[in-house]
Image (spheres, rainbow, N blue to C red):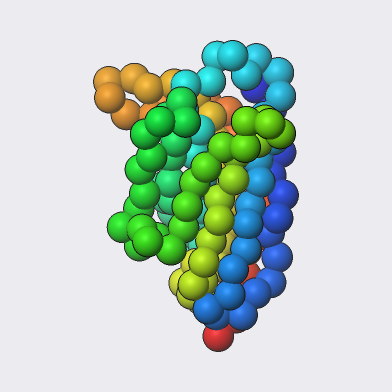
Length: 120
């Protein structure tokens, strides 16, 4: 069992920046891939970015070039640096962890989410 706790959400003006953190605990040795997902009001949850064992990253087209996923190994946390934020980035952001199956992330652990609100 892996537990995930997100932090760093909040209110920011368009064009601003925020950094989200995710702290995993429990059976962290079982984690092969971690990622960030988001869900805006009235919309389905969507992938934002994933990091596979700190070596391969993948981004949604809507955030590529603005968001950066990384791992702080010293603090055992996963980060999401979000720059040039837009109102359409407003959502609850979820940290997730799992394994790669069939070449795709299979996330089986989820955090409770942190709200990011971008004002225009």
